[in-house]
Length: 78
Image (tube, rainbow, N blue to C red; front, side, top):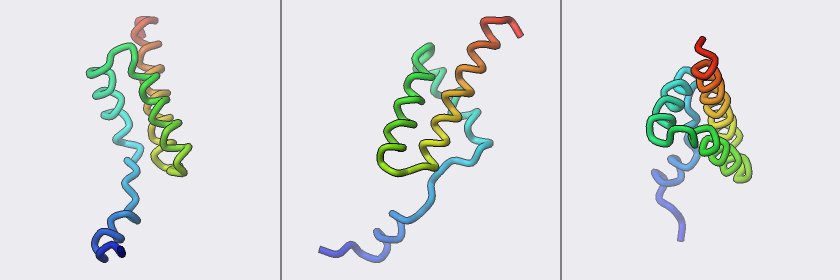
């Protein structure tokens, strides 16, 4: 069964978040999951990478790095 044209178009849209949104993603993930946030972001990066979605994998890797940087800054008192 063929998908309607509208459904086929939606599967080709690039929904990768822009770099400026990574900070917000990190804040939400930290707020919801605390110290587990970086690991959860790593999981999503791996999940999307294995499914061939390099843009989303890149975004989640950036979120994980940002969460770790923010955590390190909090611990060091910067």
